[in-house]
Amino acid sequence: MENTNTTTTPRLLEGKLGLVFGVASQRSIAWAIAQAWAEAGARLAFTYQGERLRENVEELAATFGKDVPLYPCDVTRDSDLAAVFANVAKDFGKLHLLLHSVAFAPKEALEGQFLDTSREAFRIAHDVSAYSLLACARGAAPLMTEGGSILTLSYYGAEKVVPHYNVMGVAKASLEATVRYLAYDLGPKQVRVNAISAGPVNTLAARGISGFTNMLRLYPKISPMQRNIRTSELGGTALFLASDWGGGITGEVLHVDCGYHAMGMPPSSLLKPDA
Ligand code: NAD
Ligand code: 0WE
Image (tube, rainbow, N blue to C red; front, top):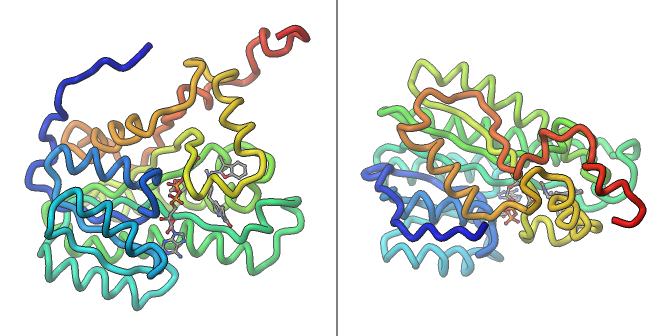
């Protein structure tokens, strides 16, 4: 069914201040979520990974007006993270929302067998994709004096084997457990920590992966809703989780995947030789 909803986003995040990690391009999941948060009234700041991405992020952030703070940040560098949160303290004074939409494993680790993963590739995948959430949360917590919502992005490969996802699956399992332990530590401050487990989206991080196109072809065949997700649906879910309507939810991993995760066997139509 076509989405014919033309109503405007309710201003559920009016007066909220947010920090977004993980915009690389217009297709980034972080950008879809940032748009939903901004439309709902949040004021946002962005980090970018390095000089290579600065112009892209500048251009996208400019669509929200002139005074959108931008900070360089490689999440594997403690000094970068310290500078980001010092600048947020200076520019915003406090923080309500944090989006962590960052992942990386060395390309060779996503190609062969999981069995061949090097110690270094394992370390990098976990440092960038899981530890960084903890580092971001520790930086943000002192600024979340009015409560808050921390959100990260996971994938089904954390729960079940997805061929070639390999060490990223193990890092996402760590990320999901990190969400639960952070939820426990930050709960008393009314800071909620959740993950969205998203179905496949054609982004820069997905582009380089052999077989990704097959993955996009598989979801319409297996998922109950018989299609891929729309990035606007990630924005909508992220808006709900960040708003007071998601106020009782923490330590949760919410699947936004058209129901793919609920299936234990493909539909019989897919198994018939003539289908
Ligand atoms: P993307 O390439 O647009 O975003 C990935 C981001 O990670 C980029 O902005 C990149 O700069 C950042 N990053 C990587 N290493 C970094 C580092 N050392 N320091 C700072 N930033 C770093 O791709 P995306 O698909 O939007 O990915 C965002 C998140 O969504 C990731 O966590 C990914 O695992 C997750 N996810 C993606 C899909 C998908 O199919 N695309 C599905 C489920 C979950
Ligand atoms: O989390 C991801 C991908 C994250 C990612 C992507 C890259 C490509 C470039 C992490 N590291 C790198 N390193 C690079 O050098 N996804 C959920 C998308 C994805 O990746 C897969 C998938 C899906 C889905 C890899 C294998 C199989 C399925």
